[in-house]
Every structure is written in structure tokens, then in C-alpha cells.
Amino acid sequence: MYLRGLGTAESILGEPAPVAVPALPRITGFDFRNKNGASTDPENRCRWCPIELGVSPNLGAGKTACNAMELRFTLAGHRAGLEYDITRTWRNSVWQRVDGNWQRLQFVPMGTGDDAVDHDEQLTPVNNHIFSADTPGFPDIRLPAPHGLRMRLRNGVITDVDATEIVQRASYAEWVIVRDKSAGLPWTRLKFPPLSDGAPRQFVFWHSIVWLRRNNANVWVMNLARSRIRLGSLSAAVINAAPV
Image (cartoon, rainbow, N blue to C red; front, top):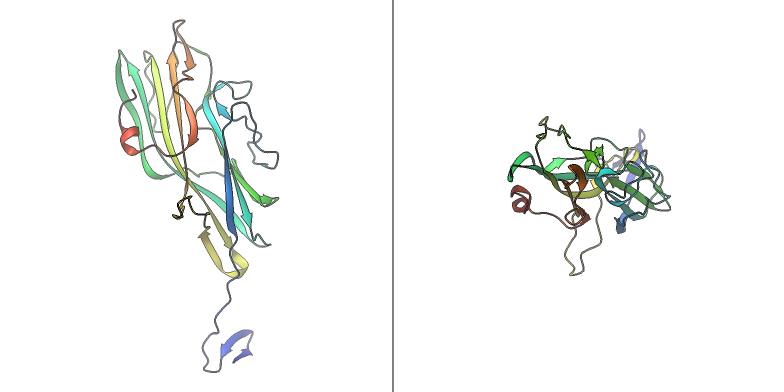
């Protein structure tokens, strides 16, 4: 039996009573949206939304040199007091082709954080949905772009003015965490439904390839045949190798 003393549940032996931890919500499903010309879900009220989805040059009036996707997570068991975050890591490389030769300009190993801000996330559930969105590539570059284009990458490296192709290949892992400060629950990973073979799912894996080329008119455009954004990961071997 437990007695209430000084506002704390204690056992008759003077030991703290076990504290009941409220049940965690669950992820019952997710949707990865990448259809060209579609827009982010109206329920997704992230600071950067709405975002046009798919592969450039279909992304809005600016036709930026990037791809775009949206992830919608469906929750069961949400209750007041819960806070959510959607966490993302990535691996990435950027290559340029000069005089027919590929040169690697940037490499980021898998597990590197890619979640510095929440502007691309809707973390308050709307109809039991939370969202993340992303626009991998070079969102500051408007296409078509004239010859002379030079881009400063995240690591400070600047592309060569004589490059004829520039390729970014990136692979991502995302998951959802939750906490309840009032219940003393720290950030905790939520479980996904298992894979079709019954194996546990730890992450949502997806990838993006942004392939820019200088065409016969000496203008930078997206190589649509080689650019994509879709579910699934790219291995380190693929990302570390020169584009083919």
C-alpha cells in the first residue's frame, strides 16, 4: 500500500512509489509526397509553406534549382501536453564537371544533422497529422541561368565558372520524437508501423538528385532525366563515386 506524505507518494518503507508514465502516442502511417506540380497539404502550416512539390523546373514561379517533398505523419494517441519534433540526418556530395573530368567539391557523411530550424515543419497536430517538407538542391539559383554561374556551397567551396555539369546527390533519414515536460518524459523516439515483412522500421529514408547542366545555348538548366526525389536511400558508395 502507498501513503501520501508531503505531496509525494511513498511506500510504507519510505521509498518513492513508482510513477506512472502516460502512454506514448504512436505513428500509424506516413505519406511521402513528391508529385510534380502538387503543393504541400493545406493542413501543413509550416512557415515556408505552401511549397510546390516535385522536380525542378516545376517549383513555383522562380523555377529554382532544387527538388521538393513533403512527409505527413499520422498519429494515434495524441493528448494535451505533448511536444513533437521531426528529426532529419543526411549524407551528401556535390560534384562538378570541368573539361570532361568530375571533381568532388563537398562530402557530408551519413548521420550529419540536417534539422537546424523548424521553419519547414508543422509540429502541432492538425487532424492527427504533423509534417516536414524539404527543398534539397540549390534553392537560391533561378533557372535558366546564364553562363558564368558560380555557387558557394555550404562548406564555402565555390563552383568553377567553366563547369559544364553540377550534381548534388543527398540521402536522408527522418523520424519523430515526442516529450511531455509536465510528466517528466524526455525526448523519446516514436515507433513506426513495421515493414511489410514484419521487420521493425526505424526511419523514413528518402533521397534527392539535382543534376544541372549547361546546354547548347550555354545556359544552365536542370537535367530532368537525371534528377529525382523519391523514397529510398542512396548508399555511401553511390554518393562517394563520380556521377555517371
